[in-house]
Image (tube, rainbow, N blue to C red; front, side, top):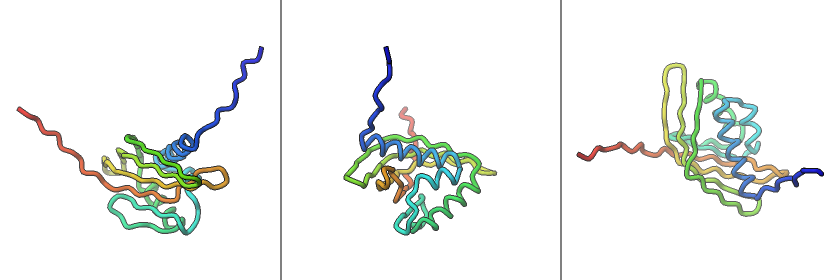
Length: 144
């Protein structure tokens, strides 16, 4: 008797969640080939890193990621509060990302609120916009 299972069908939201996870995995990998694979490659893409100006077009976005990767030794991203919405061939993900980066001489922690907008092309969700804004780090107070 065969125990084969039917192939899993993913909802659009599950597919979008996977695409968002691939983006952050590419960031953690510091591998431009992985980052290339998650983005749409056209003049309409845009990216805003925390505290930086908006980058327009794939060439400009790619060049900045390459610079970030060249100056970073390690990245760890932990997501929380992930919210997903799909409307036809456009989907967006809102999330909070705790990002730890290590460079040659420092380790930095940041908490950012991110919005990632994806477009569906050829059956694949590709990143069209990444916007990350810094959140204030809450200081813990001790009540005595």
